[in-house]
Length: 422
Image 1 (cartoon, rainbow, N blue to C red):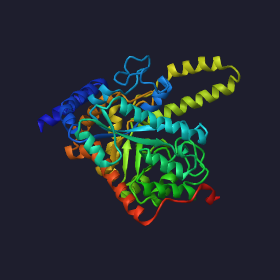
Image 2: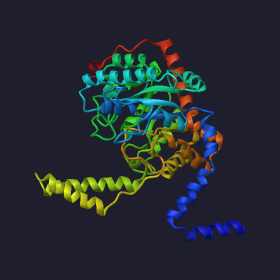
Image 3: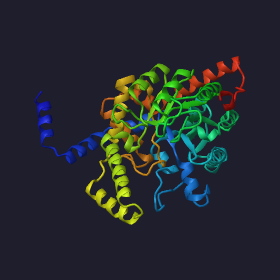
Image 4: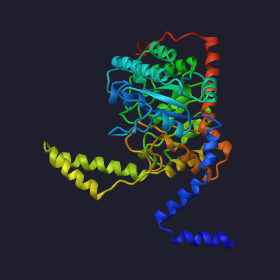
């Protein structure tokens, strides 16, 4: 009893900085155990944007940017092969992302180029990567000491309103599709655009059914809350959220509301908690909103004077430094989802190389063991962490594969198109 009293008395005299150091030291004590866990099951991250980084930085040319070392760049990437190895990544959904501002017909070609990049990356570095199409593939590739490379399409605009294109992308290896990105489509509402359909249209529901028949995971990150609910009402297979967090901790529209968390549990799906700072930490979300409002006000008062706007924005930013999201905030979202719907419905979706700012403590892909050490510090069991690392996602993949086998016995490819729903 005296030791507990002494501990709490000590806490009264610790500064926030001292307390953070104390937490870090406690976490370090669990790091070796975390590494052992991540070496026993594949850590499957739901979202990494290396392909678009290669498009922007090197026009997809490995001769210009060797994936064995991306730390020497002026703006260092978050990911390369040695750091993936250090972070004990066992499976990675590589995002084949195309801006939603690209016309949809052009998006199809640009998505093909992104998929081609993933194939060439695997071909270029065969000792480290292998294409995975099934849950069994992931486990076999991991057992062989390689990183199972999966393909995730980020945004339904990539199919150009065509189920035929969706099927061809599946044949090329795409194993999830995020239903929307930041733009509302002709058939589905986005979380960060004006809603037009109150969720999914009839064609949108047909997209979900065809994804189920193919065995392609339905990814509900980026979609509006009503689109989430509509998709969960239609799907016969478990869904994923490839990179989202809990709205109960931060009211960001990209996060998952409590009622949708409950529906995800009923669906046996998985929320892959993301590292995007604005989604994690409500004060930072509010700071960004205030900054945007300040910029809009200055643009109104200084119309046609962008230099003045820039000067006053810099002054505002100096006076209002942003709050800092941390590794602990990621763990808080994992705690929240566990407490709400259970540990069987949690995964990890970092969004490395898709964002410029990351939480303190999670600066690149080497840091996954630190997050898992923090969860051990909080009392999670080894079995819990194996589920969060990858076993939950493998379960979802296997259930989606089984649903596809059953549906393919009963029906062929959908012959409907978006014009049938006018």
